[in-house]
Length: 483
Picture 1 (cartoon, rainbow, N blue to C red):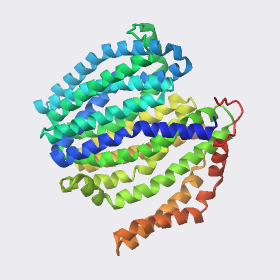
Picture 2: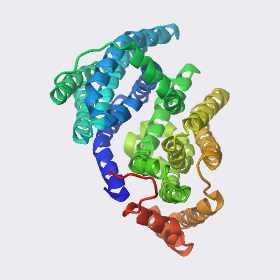
Picture 3: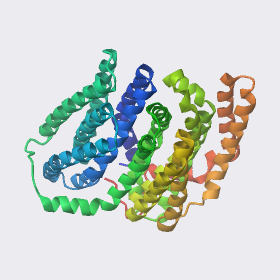
């Protein structure tokens, strides 16, 4: 199969598997509109808090499962049996850590109960992610997509029913936990039908081996989750009310939904990067530059539109009760181009086996995020957290670009970003001028000017796109094996 078809197929399968995320996003919108900012903030805090703890104890074993099962499908049951046993051991430890941390933090009993229920939801999600990793390694992507979408849809339906019955965060958390456990039962049946002889195994040597081999990539994953989720937790810990936390989480959720675009594109080209990393550097550099430029050209108009129409987005999606979310959304919009570039930088380091560099880059970004949050939240509140999130993404791109230039390949950043930035400036100027007369006409006019500027500056005709197209249509760099 050619690189183009592999990338396209990977993106399509990943998109199908991630469709359910929109169901979860829609449920959160319903929570915000029906229960208000305080309840939304409580649920957002519970989700972020438990996600951090579950990741720290789960150790990211799924990262290696896909690769190991893909290399030896007959060993799928062996890996699954051992990791299920490991989860049986780690789940009580995780729950105990979460219970101790939230209880000692002095939160009310209602908040503690919701967090503990979300801990159960997070543990169930971890089991389902393990099943998905095994399905992915076995290349039965359809089953992985079914399981992911079933899980997200079950959360949406159970949460929606709880809202319709008049329940608050506590009742909805119970409904979500029940739905999660039911999907775990269904997923277990899917697994046993695929591998009828799976049983619990206790190979401590395998556990230690997986931890040792996965450590650099695990650290990268932990750092990414920490700087993506710690802002909500730090806002709550540093004294911001649930309404303010809910407003920030609402703005952040819009941005995280837009993150699906680079996630899908990069997940599709990741195998291409991995193959090209084995061949001449020129081939990898071409695909790398082309992907960077493509995502940058998508991100710039998105950032401008979100920043310009932040008030409209917040009111339409969440309602008038969330106007506090408008300023942080405008600040977070600035981070969109950096987020998109960051996806490429981290993944090109990982795909070319520079795992230590990837851990260093994301670790530095994580430290910067926590430090700036601690400095700015007491002074600026949720706006300070938005500034910290944006500064983190800028730092990630700067440090990641330096690491990539040193360890992988040179990209020529000035030439890469200058023309899309000129087009973005033209779009912003058009929005400002036309918007004075009619905001309805401003968006199509601004987008038209942006595309015209890309054409006039030659961004759409440059060699990276033509070369990437040739590569994906069947060009095989030396040393690369295409199955």
